[in-house]
Length: 328
Image 1 (cartoon, rainbow, N blue to C red):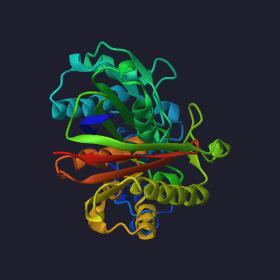
Image 2 (image 1 turned 60 degrees about the vertical axis):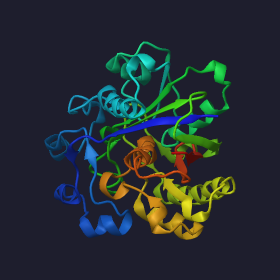
Image 3 (image 1 turned 90 degrees about the vertical axis):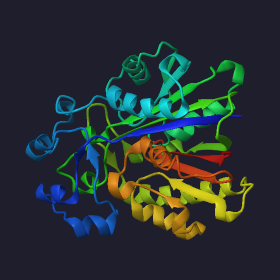
């Protein structure tokens, strides 16, 4: 049985609000954005003057225009998770990282994050784009406990605005940057435990959401949104069948792709607004970090007996979910 000991999140300070995007003169404004994706603001590691002057036309230059590295933002989220768990870097026995846009082909992003934190432990990358958190939790939950350390750190450092073409309004309005971290244990109990995990893929659709090496984010928007709604609703219902609590204690956190997509899922599945948790309206689509960041932001709000269904979808095409139960 896997136990969740702590969660952390980090959002960089630079704000990409709708007025800023309108100032880029790419055919968008506040009402256009809200009607289509329901996003008011995002955060970015990019310098705003760099975006305004270059529109990030050559994403190979974005690293030099960044205020933070992935290692720094991932480590910031991890420090919050460790503080909540009452742990120190010396207690972490393994680090897994993953997401949509690592800064290097090699080494593993996990090695840079571990170095930033001063962790001496085995490190590797396990990622499935925006579905990374579910993929990591599913893999960890399925492993023999003796093959895992007491504490495993899972990190997604998602600074994907480096891959955005700010000449393209369809993608420019979506993306924000964030990093998430989670500490899990196969044997040490905690206030939140994993009840069920699930993971599935349709590899034939791999080309519908891509970031070519050194290139811009590309997606077939209409097809991807339909896929995301269907798979999220299916996975949410699958997790709900494993629920042991009353419907009033069942909470939903989805992939933070856009607010309209999430509202569509809630309507289909009968999730009331008070049990739907999201941050996409203020932070945008933050890739693999989105759903775990929402969980982290609400870490203190869940109470004993609550269940949380976290469902994510992403490139691959891959989707998955995690059902959590709060014990204290």
